Length: 118
Image: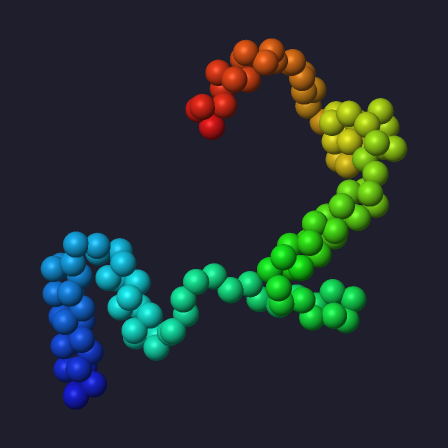
């Protein structure tokens, strides 16, 4: 019974804080952190293990990801598949009936007009 009373009192307290706040989102997040007893401030990249070496520095982690994705693209080597165009890759990847796709080239002006709407 006491637990329910305390929870309700806490809920009302936080509701009043949020209602009075000028920055409701910040107040909500501070409330969540306080309840979780979190002292997290800023962004922290979790360490990763690369070749039995633990990388913690964000720059080293980023460089490891860049290196990984460069190696992956070299291994995929899409240019050796068929003619190397998108349709050939799709046909090789999904055998069977595949609807006809017509690729229409766009001018630079058309693309510049489209970009603001993305």
